Image (cartoon, rainbow, N blue to C red):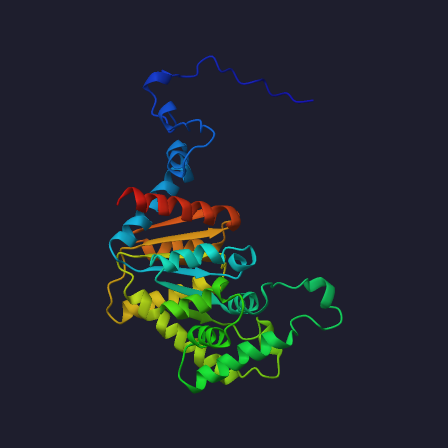
Length: 317
């Protein structure tokens, strides 16, 4: 049994609530959203707290980037393709809002399969046991063929695959990021970690060609980053590879004397993770500019971002 006596609180010093600084006031509260409201009304209704404050600010900054004619580059993982967001990114490319895309190696697989067949993303658990995972013949032949040809013609991987899709006149090219970007002349760079992608197990894969075309794409990406002053870089759904690529590109261009310190970055993903927060949101904008992190499902947050951005651009016409 304890022998401690309960502490006496009678001498506690207090102060008036009305004179205390507070972080939340009723002025920060959200507003009810009536049925049938516009995107603008939804954005204006958000509470002036945390992402409710940051998200509208990010939208305004991205709109200013486009109005000013600055670069708007998207780094992405393949999840965007797999949850059906290609049409939204294609629309932004068609509107000349997105000026460049950086992909990991999985993106070209899912994007090319969409172009060729209209579907992608096999059920890995059903085929891994018998060694059939990743063995789709057309995927390996088309992509490795494009990469091998691109290496011989001194093309980057993104341009080489985009050209192959356009030349192949596949039935769903209109839903392909790579085919659309190639048609519009928008640079797509592909940053590969050898062994991570199913096409690397096919007999048509050439390590020499993969390395040559992906390294050329890294140099092209660096050229885009060199002009990023005043622009924006969004990392969407890449937790490790593209944040590392972006940080290396940034140090290269700063080493070569390019001023790239005042720009907007944002990371969109399911959870906060070290590399995107450090290499995209925080470190690159430490001197000036601003970085944002948006946690949530891509199939909800990216359509919301696009709708709000287009609405903001229309508002300023």
